[in-house]
Image (cartoon, rainbow, N blue to C red; front, side, top):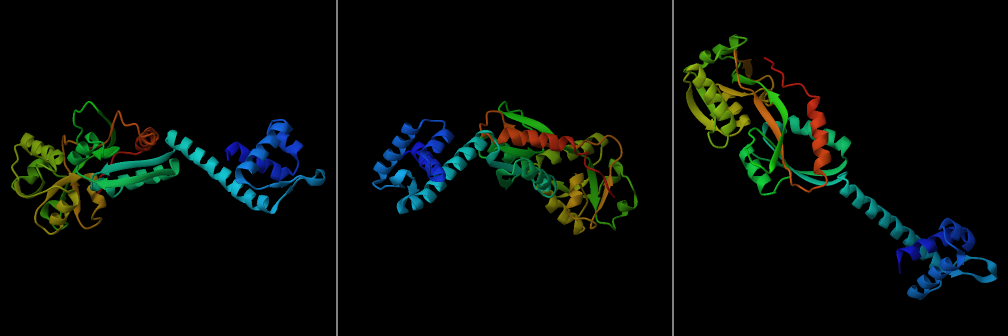
Length: 302
């Protein structure tokens, strides 16, 4: 039983006329009749009653017609699905992201992907930047959103977001009375700091900022995730410097203040392997670039 035979049978069953069915199939009547005969022979049953110069479906033909129509429809769907996969309009992407980006940036991006690439599914993994880089090298994820871009030839990066660094403190802290702060205002303050290993990007930025101003805060705690740092700040265990997007985590419960002078920014990069052959990746990258191009830098609120 071949698909061409099924198509011939369905056409004749719909027309109940070999001549009209042959014209719709863009073929002559004898080859069409031959295909129906081969189909009936392979099944061992008669599907059409050709008596009295009329064409009618037998009981077996009536039941077989429904199944044949379903088979042809499924075949068409399978072909369309394969073509959508090849064009990157469908498929699966494995995406890594940092904890803070998971509160706003990544959900917004996935919302846009849902509109532009509705048949692409996502497997999501919250990971620190270093772990994402390792996962990209090992081909465990297709795309990552990281703070630090390592100089690795296989990886390509696109700037997704640039935001300011802010000082965060409990609302009743004496420094909260000021609308802006200088780095020297933070001298000798108890400080909640990023880990020099898992939070190396922010650790280097903050240490460099203090060193350039000759300031020595009192580092009391080291943590890898921003939300954990904010939890300690909220408990009154110290102040911290965090990216502006951290304002999304504890709205109204902490005081955020900008720093005066030349302050390094916190950048977020979209990173992927150049040799990744997942067809869904290029359309997603182009969609993400267009999305990020429309976004302003993270705003600073107090």
